[in-house]
Amino acid sequence: MALVTTKEMFSKAYNGGYAVGAFNVDNIDIMQGVLNAAVKTQSPIIIAVSGGALKYMHPAYVRYAALAASEECDIPIALHLDHGKSVELCKQCVDNGFTSVMIDASAYDFETNIAMTREVVEYAHKRGVVVEGELGAIAGIEDDVVVDDKYGSFTHPDDAVEFVHRTGIDSLAIAIGTAHGAYKFKPGQKPQLRFDILEEISAKLPEFPIVLHGASSVPKDRLDTFNSYGGQMPEAIGIPEDMLRKAASMSVCKINVGSDIRICYFGELRKMFALKPTKFEGREFLEPARAAVEEMVTDKIVNIMGSAHKA
Ligand code: G3H
Ligand code: ZN
Image (cartoon, rainbow, N blue to C red; front, side, top):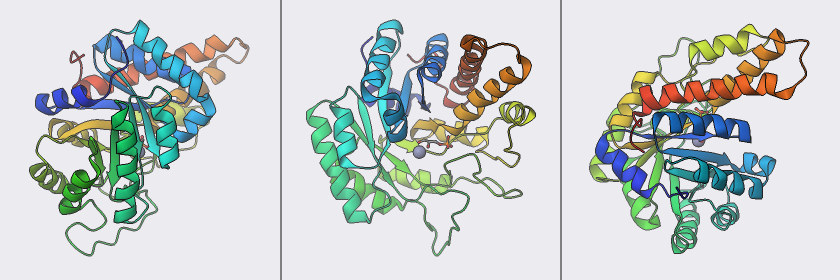
């Protein structure tokens, strides 16, 4: 099956009450682990590549690896630029075989965000590529959120409507309490997502696909493996899985997972290095790490996204 955009994926997900997982990949092994899970569960899948990962893997390798995947796997696969920080990077990815790009101009003021996003949309749509925009502050644990009104630093529903209409984007990443990284909440802090804001946005933008970033759940078993073999991430806390499931059943059509992939992959590598001190053949370590990614992504597809058998 050829690489596809997320257009049809999202319309099916919206109507079917599930979400499609976008998993961050940093190398071919991780990409294969993610794809194996999608094939096994017969799920559509989004391969997410950040600007940093693109630089590390090199654009041509990313492009041809994704094409190889589309040749090997009979499921819908989208190749997506995650958090494109400049218009130029987005255009480069549009020209390099990506089927979807995210322009993340959320750090700029509203009008600049609209102008940059609009420019990417005009370029991408002419070439059959879809665009994700971002509005609102998707926090990190260090951000002290000062709530001065009902919406605080979360995405304001009226702004979302104006942003979508003026930019022409295909999907929108919103801030409702998720955060990037493995330390989303302070110890003792109760994880909370603002489903009321999500509902308001969906009511004002019917049928429009919403994206949830910062959605790693930091699974306990993976974190335990990581920490048992020399890792030091004792305080990591993610988004509870039931909240993600609820979001997936609503207007959220894409759920982004990056930190969990890394905790899982490097946790398994740590374990293998510790358990096989006499080995030095790469596959002794890499195959179990890839299999661990496959296992964890399978679990997420089945138990969080709800996208199994939707390929
Ligand atoms: O864009 C990538 C995701 O938003 C990563 O979120 O750190 O919770 O995995 P995460
Ligand atoms: Zn993100």
